[in-house]
Image (cartoon, rainbow, N blue to C red; front, side, top):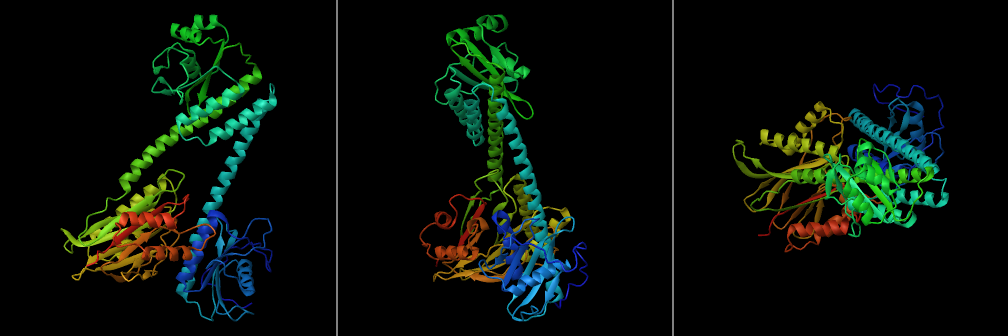
Length: 602
């Protein structure tokens, strides 16, 4: 097959055998498929080709499935498959003005390389007409393939860690189930299984306390259940959510960890304390403990330390009115149960802290929109329903200085962006990028949004920020006739939508490649448009329109249709909420931002 490789490309896969045809392809599914589909989409736009695709090379298993294509659902001609196999065989880029035995298309493909040079797949574009490929197009597709390879490698590392964690947890579960089998083997195994399941998804201390009570009440049937947590050298009781228990020790809500009570001793010495005779408690513990023991009419009490990953978190206390035999097997069951409870308590404490910090961080980073004469502004932020409840999506709006830089000049800067990730790290990177963009705008007030974005990208690469980013950055300047002049630059972000008063909606599709540490910094471009009185400009992130297995283009079209139906008499913020309700997912797995600007009608 005739071919022309990229100049200076070199052999990326020197170990590939001559005549290699054993590559096996698979369709990209799940979160990785959506991410790689984005690279196929960007490749089509970057090289102005009608079709892009990403092939993956699975290790070992046979797949024989179609690649991930852009646009979704399009078929791949057989000749393209042969070209992709040729890229895999050569281990280097392949740019063909025609497709060998299929002259109706032109092909450009670049291998996707693993960290050790192994073949991960192929990124390719296909044109339905003969065309030459320029040196710039060769470089652009190679740069985008480098970013795609980095994305695949990151997902592979994350998948390896996840599988290792699942195997470790499975081993722990097996060991704990085996320890519970000597007495009432089936019943105790079922108890521990329920404990693992019921306590795995708890999210608050009250819920942990309630579920522990439900678990032990049915199988162990204690007369008393109590829980206390260590806080700054004290034990603080967690009251029964239904208010039905009495303290086994007649003490205040908080008591010192050094006090002479069984629960304090269990937490202090990190061991199980069993009391099955009144003489034991009268000899070793405080009078208040004896009074509590007598008032509840208990015969047997067991205090279990709640062992966290770093320290003892507190104590779980169970008491029975009749003598209760706690043999070796029962000790194993109780210890395992306390272990599950401790994991749930530690997770609840950690989640409470993270939610508190995340909410504070979110409030600090969400811009208070400025009041701008001649414009109505509104914004919404909805985090993904997981992780830290804060992420890398953001919006921003601020007045631009005048040409002298001394006072605001009536112009406005607006930004909507998306840093990869849904956690505190993504939010921290987002804060850096937002601050750098503001600084670039204020340092050079006469420059356009494209030059500010280019300055941020240079700083991004110099600082070595290991994240990718898409964003829209725009400047709006008022005109004397009540309209606004819009100038924007797009780094791989979904297109803004502009709804005119007559109901037409324009998709502002011009864009450049996303910001990524594997892509070189090139001058950014921009475009302009007039925003007439009565118009609405909508900027958003892909969490609003991207769905697994759905065509993102169709979702953007639906968003435009809904935008066109908004009443000019409805305030902008409830209008944005209506768009989120109709177009957005019911259970979001990605952060979502909407930023709307309306020019009031004259």
